Image 1 (cartoon, rainbow, N blue to C red):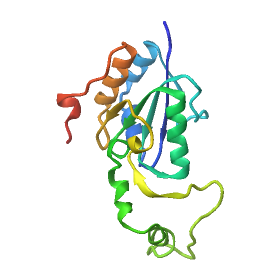
Image 2: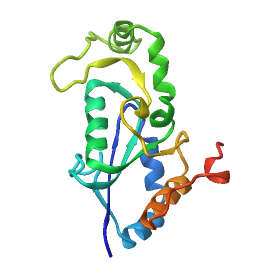
Image 3: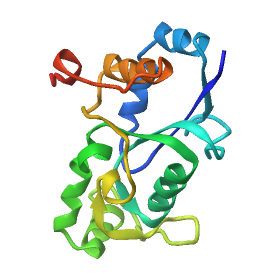
Amino acid sequence: MKKITLASDWLEGCAGCHMSLLDMDERLVELINEGLEITATPITDLKIPAPGTDIGVLEGAVATDHQEEVARLFRERCKILVALGDCAVFGGINTMRNYIPTEELLKRGYITTESTVEGKIPQGPGIGKHLKKCKALNEVVKVDFYIPGCPPSADAIYRVLKDVLEGKTPRLKDELLKYD
């Protein structure tokens, strides 16, 4: 049985989409038994997809230069790229920041909040620089499949992964696109 490799990461989001991925419960084990190999995730030691990874799954919008680099790396190294959740698909709630100047956002977030004592805006080479605009994933790289939802259901994620494992083109419809 040929292994189908999957790598995932989260960008500008809350990690709720990865919680839905884990909510597949024993179906995740089923997919692994059918040939899915999870090679890199934000919650494992390996975080970067290997060249030739079959499926890349990205959650979250693209808001910093570091996140833009991750999106480009996933597109370059993954045969199929999946936008997981509303932030990756549409930009989500993160795009609300597009209407407020970046300096004002950073000042509010790190200096003037009611709970901040002696706040300062963090800076350094390990901290990404905010882009002028927070973007949906497809505004940065080509996306092959979209799984909307906030977060998307475990059923929708399972269906897409199962279809790919079976060599089918994923198609989400009806209950799998229902928002509660």
